[in-house]
Amino acid sequence: MTVLAACLLLAAVFGGTLLLTGKVRAVLLRRAVLDIPNERSSHVRPVPRGGGIAIVATVLPAWLAVIAAGAVPGSVVIVAAGAAALAALSFLDDLSSRPAALRFAVQIAAVAAGIAALPPDGPVFQGWLPPPLDRAAAGLCWLWFVNLYNFMDGIDGIAGTETACLGAGVALVAAAAQASAGPAVLALACAAAALGFLRWNWHPAVIFMGDVGSVPLGYLLGFLLLGLAAHGLWQPALILPLYYLADATWTLLRRLVRGEKVWQAHREHFYQRAVQKGLRHDAVVRRILAADLVLVALALWSAGSGGASLLPLLAAAATVAVLLAELSRKHRPAGVAGSGRAA
Image (cartoon, rainbow, N blue to C red; front, side):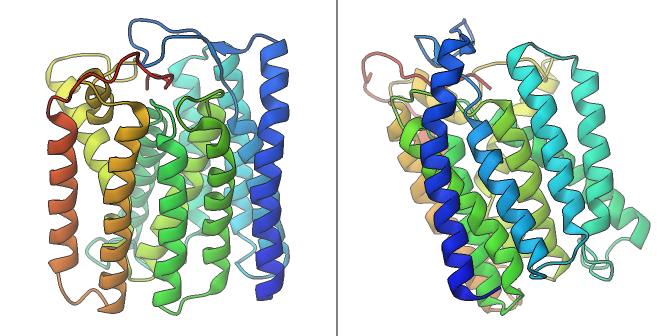
């Protein structure tokens, strides 16, 4: 795939998502597909849910175009198919809640199939585990990432901002490591769609992504991050999503210790508590964006050093710790709560 073709493809993804989101919003409003506020929500008025349809409708064709151009192995079509299946079930869940067991079973099947698309001779855990255990552990990490990506979509702009940063970060790391350009284009397609969607989802949001967007995005980005690790870039693969990993994992463990149902919606993530303590949605997301930009820089440092030093990883941990502390402190009330969705 030429540079010109890649740029045209990414422009089409951005413009397509920007325009299609408005069309999707109009349909969702007519059909009253709305996220109604409840005691666990971070918004105060009904907002259309399901805007991720526009993201899926632009990102998946872009991935198929990259595959057709031979820029990535043909086996990646399995991942595109898995994302499509997850999007279909997730949209049904957005319309009317489906059993958690069904959703989890489909996620397991998609991850199990997608593992075959990872580099066959590249251990994700750098040879510390036997090949079968390496793939099993990678699958578990991927499955968790799919779910945490959904859990973390709880206020205006957060999922779109994280997707843009992760997509750009993966592409920059791949370029710094002089890896194949194909995965970089796949990652930038996710970022371009997220930027187009943010026009509608930035605070105050007029449409929410819904599970139809967050679940397949977590699946696609999880695959790209595992791909980095399988090529020896395990530090960047860990650094780039570190805020999402820390917030979601810490919150899950805390709820598990208290014996709560971890699959139920709640408002206990750090970013949600920051809104409850007085920050507007956009103020929270700007703080996360600043930390994510630092994480991208640290991931590039790690990639440039060949992973020979643990300093980038330690600096990333410190960056996330500072962010979590900032989100945990009390702020001056910002007036009426925004319109994000509880995760």
